Length: 206
Image (cartoon, rainbow, N blue to C red):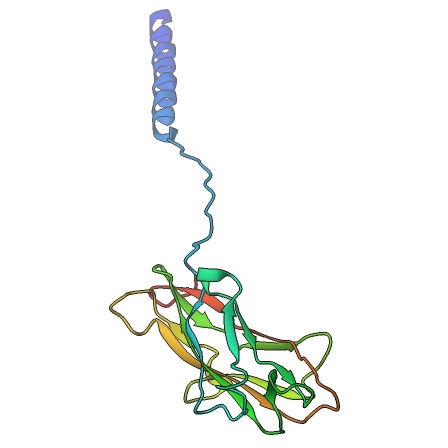
């Protein structure tokens, strides 16, 4: 009887040990954890491919002789920020007057490019603001999609940059119109901000 009891106890111990080993074997795992920091894609920044005065559409008088509205790039070769110097409004100076009568316009032709090779660029509606020294009482500023309207800009998708592909540019028009003449020579500062949202190559949001 003792031998039989001993055999049973020994068998149970072996069974418990075997179950423990089996359980451990099926619950073991390998874990890999890590942290990485992703910097921005510096190529994703819509930029000006060209920015030029449209003389045939400009009706302000001093466009080719006494005064030529000038464009400079604030950030140099990056060309993401342009400064347009149109001139003063009024009759006090003959060499710096862009406008001399209500209804006159200065028009620029702009080509915007998406230089990113990884992301498409979905344009937002342009935001136009005026400096603290003036409102838009005297001038009207519009950024228009060439052949369309300002509303047509929003949602325009610029393809990823490819030197063999023309779909990564969009043609825009900057139009500044004199609404009324001021009583004194006036300088009005304005800003046109054009933003874009990154889209992956397949068109879904990033």
